[in-house]
Length: 113
Length: 114
Figure 1 (cartoon, one colour):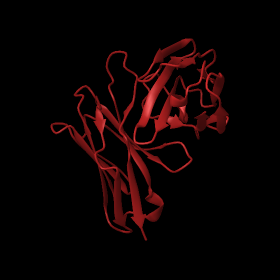
Figure 2 (tube, chains in turn yellow, red):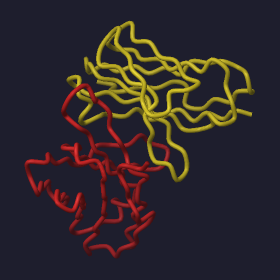
Figure 3 (cartoon, one colour):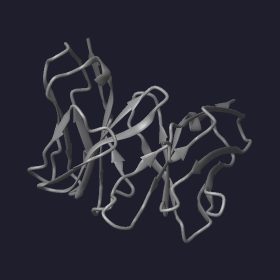
């Protein structure tokens, strides 16, 4: 199993550009989530999904969209990037729907100029 | 409002000694707690967890203690090894209703010196 994979590993955007961060898992996990990690802020939940077709907002959802058309994939979309979205983004998955023990991907480092 | 607090940003210990990482929480509805370990440029990895029906859980060198009355948990690493040097995150979750969210603390950087 590859576990949780994320692409790209690193991305530079200009303010106002859009992009999609990809996340995939091959463990047939129902629960998937996106976090951002900023210095001194820990991990903050952006959006999560408890199954295909079901998504909900986390702690810091503004500026991000998600969809879950399949069990395996959970892309995160930035519609109009802002410098405040410069961060490291982690995708995670968990068996079941309660988001307990989560398995994290390696992260995507995003720089918005 | 920070519901999960790790008040020590960093901790330094000697190899072979005990490392104690602390975590406090304010939400009395939290009933499941986890510790994650993170190396630089990698995603967090699950370390150990504890349910609120227990006050201790042990896995090899790692033990988590939960004091519900004080809303406090701690992670003990004995003996500490240089490979344990990483950022440790405490996380908490409620199991009731439709809340499926993990709330993380800000992390504690542990350095184990040879």
